Length: 415
Image 1: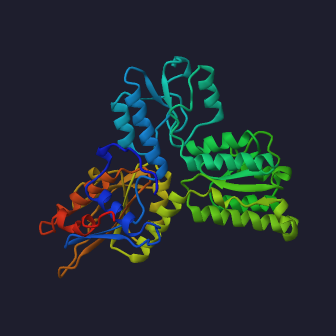
Image 2: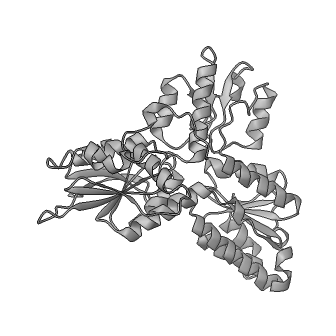
């Protein structure tokens, strides 16, 4: 049986949590990616088989609230946002937790203001070796309340392992993301490291491996993305690829294939094992499950998609990226962005700006049902999805009651 976590009840929900529980019972091996359907008559929601809080996020939330319960008289700090969801972070701040840094790394509270009696929580993204050392110097244990996702730690261990074997670590990720900064730091303790963002950058790195571009071009193309003393002629001769766990898993696999082919081209297939190491076992299963479930939603089809999550959430933005290629897609933070049945406020992931779309909710004729795909990022509480559902069905006066719509899931009990 998979581990369960003590997540505060106010993040749970009487709709989505019930559906998740029912699907776990009917599909314990997680083989069925078909969406769960909530049909209210006028409007039907197709809900992703996998969505919302993942293992790492629930683990982080449990530890953070445990720290609050166990230290009522102490100052409690988080190195930065614990996860990329404003509702969770705001609740922790209301309970007195102070953030030491912004997600960008900009310091808000100098380490000099901390003392040995303070509690410091490491966020789910992990932190750098340098910050761990800074805390240790002040006699503050960085691991007493360490919420680092186990799958992030798995990437660190793999990076350090291949570094000790004289391979360079190639990270598929966003250079300024907290997780990638942490992975870069841990990998760099044993190896040279370079970060690439996407397939286009992988293609250029492959050209460098094959000797098709100059070092001058390389240093300009990947400025601030490689470790000190990085020599592309030497350090790209033996490589392994790991990823920021929130990136598109199939993109990481494509990037690894591109670089592997470049290695084969340069050194020959018979010698490639000495120059390229397989690291596919570092992919986060939860990220892959959410992305696969989203692809199943797309295949099932709908009039449009609503995706709920923090606007700075990397894994959520990738779900948006998948859906918007196939249908109108609205990335919202919570139900407050549903201004009315005529207007929705949502984030454009390309410009990073909020925009308003008018007449977003289609009108169906002859009693046809509006079909809505609904999913969420890995750091989104179930209750936020409930609020989206309730708000939308409130605009359809003849909708079925929630209790009736979810009855088939409520009737499923643990055998």
